[in-house]
Length: 130
Length: 282
Length: 160
Image (cartoon, rainbow over all chains, first blue to last red; front, side, top):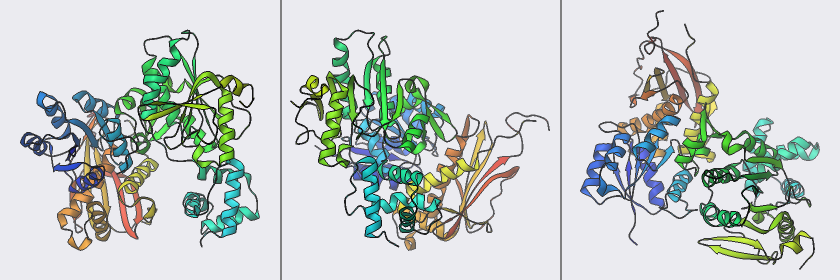
């Protein structure tokens, strides 16, 4: 089986590094984008990622707009979308899920939290450790 | 100063006496790490000084907190995933298949720690029973007063909420209060909490349909494991199901169980539950 | 006039502790400890909140602390860090702390991207007053988190 591909979308290079280490440690290939527009370009250029880990507050195109854009494209149905953001009000999580995000991780997080969410989504076996 | 052999031995004996949990040699680091907060609170320079003081002047409250600190483990929602999926897809349908709607399903979460396991079960029951008038009762027990108090409060930090709780369940069943998330009444009302030591010969209740006893047996010695498993058999209905941790088994400990493998999960069923309930060996 | 809603100091402490515990060394690192207030730290990152509550959250620390944090987050030796790396790391810490503080305050509101100053230029936060300040020591270096509430009652427009 070929390796799965994760797209990490965050305007902070430090946060992209943190996430790259975690999902890379879980066996994913990783590509990065610094905002929603870059992420859309990466998805269009291919290969299509299995999962995108998406920050909310970013310049140019924010994470909610990116999630909405991906969900409007039938050919991107297979992309699992997980918000990873400091936005933590109940209402914000509801908004992200309504826009089409499959899962939601609140910053700050531990590596186990990312692994457990990926297990819920069926992308890694339960009990995987980064 | 590092913990002396005598101090480690004192802690080891205390924990064994109160919880039957075995701290093997080499776990000195665990004692140092887990007792550091109590040491800071007592304004003592190091864990060695903290234990030395406890040895000199016995203090029941401090002893209970030491046992708590060494026996409470970090936990997550939907921990290990597949047992909950097997519970939802296989075990629950089997239980309710030939049972009047009026009879509640009874579940025992036998080492509930800070409450994630019983509340996860309650969330699953909420989904499964949404369109029926079926009901369920979850008894959640733990040895630790501190863990039980937190479980009862049903308040979780953001870091705890991040641990394996599906976002859809979070927004449906929790509300935000300050920096914490509080579990809703619909989920909470199905769960009752009680302090219980698994080495107690009298089970906390009987007639359970399902028992969750995950990642507990590994801490006990062989004899304690056998006793715990026998008592659990006695507390179960004849057709009941037992979930153990992924690394745990009844094999070689108590042979009166059958294993049913569903996907990647093993579920255990008492082979001769009536005999077990009557207290006889088969 | 209504009393302005302010975040609780204890809650801010928990948030800062969670951020440091998750990303900057966890249990093995030296703990964050309360410290006497010193002069304004040399590095400051500010995120602003506007909407149901308006104000700013500032994460500030010494230059050595900012370099240590950036090195830990980026897995890069300190002597290879550019100013942009430090600004990025400190900005993300402000973003995480600020976003969590926003969730404690009346909403809905939005969080701005972080604005970072390196080298001691004073941050100008016009029409706002410091409401919460935490002075801490991390790895022997000063760290400060402060919350500034807007003094102009923009959201309700009540006359003063």
